[in-house]
Amino acid sequence: MTRPLTLYLVAGEPSGDRLGAALMRALRAEAPGLRLAGIGGREMAAEGLERRFAMAGLSVMGLAEVVPRVPALLARIRATAADVVAAAPDALITIDSPGFGLRVARRVRARAPGVATIHYVAPSVWAWRPGRARAMARYIDHVLALLPFEPPHWEAAGVSCEFVGHPAVEAPVAGPGAIAALRRRAGVGEGAPLLLLAPGSRVLEVRRLMPVFAPTLARLAPRLPGLRVVIPLAEGVADEVGRAAARLDPAPLLIGPGEGEPVRRAAFAAADVALVKSGSIALELAAAGTPMVAAYRSSPLTAVLVRPLLRVDTASLVNLVAGARVVPEFIQQRCTPDAIAPAVLALLGDAGARAAQRTAFARVLAALGGGGPAPSARAARSVLAVLQRRAAPG
Image 1 (cartoon, helix red, strand yellow):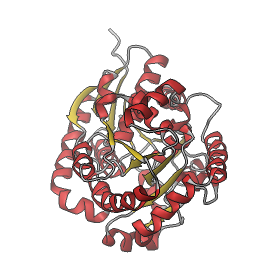
Image 2: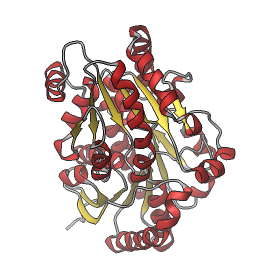
Image 3: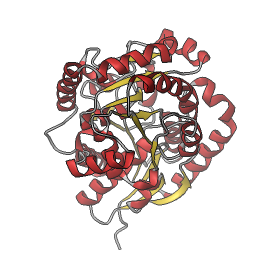
Image 4: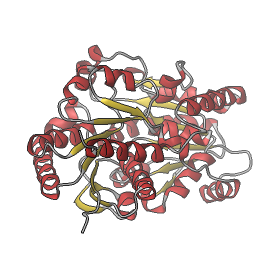
């Protein structure tokens, strides 16, 4: 009896879980009968992933954030790598979370060199630490890139890489009925604004940004009669955000991770303006057509150590792909309520500025694969092509 094609997927945070779930659906459409096992969250489990370990606790980034958790992370890396070797899959697919996934891949390559290794979401070697590409060439066979300018950086280092597009371009956009229902649920009155807050999907991101977002909201509320707030909660930080949100005024509507993607997307599309952590969520909001202001703050130690290595001056993917300051962005020392609140007010009060952002969003989404095959389908075909090449004689 022929052994079914077996893939071991490793996702370490909510965005990777969504990416992995979409990839699983696309893989099964292309190759029915696949066996899919590994580490994932709620969404990958719903797609039938044979979960070997819990995803919780793997989402960390930044030097100061990682150091206290090194022993636990190393233990999980060793256990995961051992489980991959024991499972003997045709391929290991690590999804984002390079601090965890790539260390697993390196151990697997050392112990089971016959397992194909594929990394989904190319690390930002164009932004900092370009030497990572050369290092990864020793243990990664193929990289799936979300951004169109990434493949040349990897190919120059000897790593096979394919641009597959960004998942934001294939996410369904909420319709008028779902938007209206969300606004009613949030208690938005006629002519009143709805502000979406998204402080991140990692605990330490939340702990750094909520103390900024809370006083920002306190400055906005007196200037915006009837203001309402909605916060979509990422899996793994729901309790942390919930505790901080309990002190906000006006009290926000919290969208729990268990409510599903349609409700989350309705919150994105229903908001008049969003205040978000710079990151992948900005592209999801761009796909929903929601104007936004972005903020980011890492630990002082991480900022000092990383700043000399940076090759770009923005943390916003929207700004990066657009090649312009489309989204107002407040990073590190500029990430303060006194700076952010006026930017949010200005955006809410300027229809032309909101329209200009939406026009730029359309260009960005087109550059990220909008209008073509779904990125998840392109990624699935790329994975299967790698396996076919490896299986070909000679």
